[in-house]
Image (cartoon, rainbow, N blue to C red; front, side):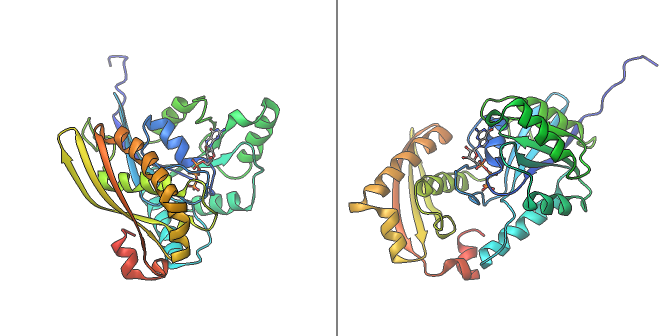
Length: 298
Ligand SMILES: Nc1nc2c(ncn2[C@@H]2O[C@H](COP(=O)(O)OP(=O)(O)OP(=O)(O)O)[C@@H](O)[C@H]2O)c(=O)[nH]1
């Protein structure tokens, strides 16, 4: 006996779940430190399963970003829910996110019930703690701990950064002993094209009406690197001509703004200058058509 116990290397998958707007994407961004998951103040904007790999000397946590579970109204809605459930069965540790500034509700109870059936370790994450005072936070922590049988209840603020590292430590502690899963330099395995499409979609969603989120899809047709410049040709799909008009704006002024915003973020992501060519197209009823859905990556 040496007296020094060698701790095993741990690696595995983790994800955040919770009702729409609970702060999952923002938290993922805060943890990863770069804009990989997409946030928007509109609910249900996260669509793709995006992995971020967090490297520590003794561990590796692979974060999977899932869309929020919601009542399906269309085929797309059903596919999203299937995707959420599939992800849940594949992870080792799940953080159930509940905002500090909203009462624990039926949605939280529903998700918590679903999670209790899984083999994964479930933590409760009380998000947005910067929005409440100490007394309200204490009350919320109590209410949340009564919601289910959690391995831990961790308060965090993705905006101030408070406790973000602690949360990662706690999640990592619940990973199984395992060899490293991904190489050291890997941050995400999501193809750049998907990330670029998400950035464009996010920019296109800013400031448009509540029902539009599920009616916009973005397909990046071509990305051509030319030295320090990347040329990107992308199509924005909407369902109806009226939606096309909204996305375009008066004399295409809105689309121009969308392009400028997206271009800046894509430049940050790729580290090159970007030429962005955007087209708005109408794909009728694409949310209900499996063939169209597949073409758009769902
Ligand atoms: N003040 C504050 N606001 C936050 C924090 N985290 C998230 N928000 C805000 O809450 C809103 C929702 O955050 P998201 O991260 O998009 O939530 P989500 O759970 O991923 O939402 P869906 O994609 O709809 O499932 C956004 O407007 C965020 O800016 C936080 O720690 N503090």
